[in-house]
Image (cartoon, rainbow, N blue to C red; front, side, top):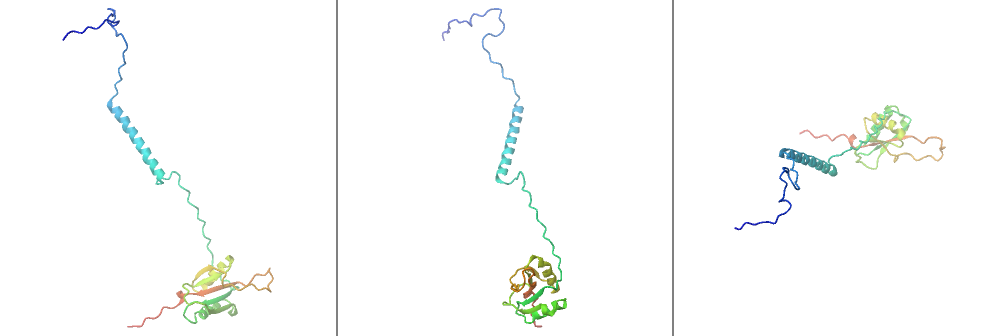
Length: 197
């Protein structure tokens, strides 16, 4: 193979006393150890994964950053039962058992009510589930609870359905007749006796 000769250029004529490098040279890359690079890569991956998982859970609502304050529940005032014989009482039997209203009237009169202040009668239905003492105004709740205790316990509810109508002859500054209504329910009916076998 023939020897190739190149034309001479300025790099062929170097001074003899020059021992250093001549021309453009790139600096050598500093050597980084492989384990340092790997450690930084693992740390960055762990941080990015943690931020991603946390962000996803917050976006889905599984993690709440600031919990909503729990609403404060106002305590229900406890009503102390009061036996107030100034109320008139209407006793209605809403069961199929006859005479139940009269027996309940006798219990109420024995507790201190005047006999003419307590009226017994039959209701329009005979399947009322639970004995209830009804009162018309919030201020009457304690008296209704007291009457419920007198008859051996009953539910107490506010309802003006059974209240007597206002007397047109009564002046406005006088209070209307105060009345409590006892509706006797099936919980007062004695269970039927089973025949002995």
